[in-house]
Length: 238
Image 1 (cartoon, one colour):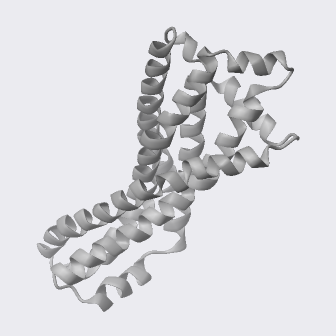
Image 2 (cartoon, helix red, strand yellow):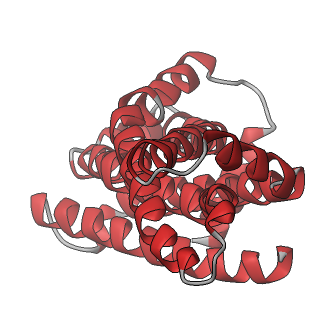
């Protein structure tokens, strides 16, 4: 798997570049995943506001509700949950797509035409995921903060000025950069694992069974690695 990634990274910086396929992959990862990411982000922010309010009220710190929601989303929940949602929606479809190409011998046909399948099937997905994941995480953060605003201000009676002024004072660019670094690495992990599992779908079984197993392995492995890497990256960037 590591050699697969290294060859793909080498092809990223060597011409020719497949810009048309790259744009299509951006739509595949980004545009088609926006609804599920925004919906998840909104309700995540609302749940955070509801639960954190009753916790902070016990310590008389309701004024810190806004910063607590923002920091939780920007540093951790935004990148992680957005990556998990995209893994379930786009990662599984990517693995199945490449896996079907493998079992139907379309990848072998590319080899027979002296074309490198990685350049057409893997590199555009890696680049698109690395670009799209931070953008989706940012959208998740924004909609989550405003979801928390609806619950905090409109339902729980917190002052609107308190909610946003404390957030502006306590959330800094270091927190934003940490979220961006995590999203970039999650994009690489998800696209790498899903492409690899689909590319070698025949190793998990024959025909449709191999594709289904490869898809399951890709989603489970990607999700677990996202959580593991989030811990190690968080411990380094803390």
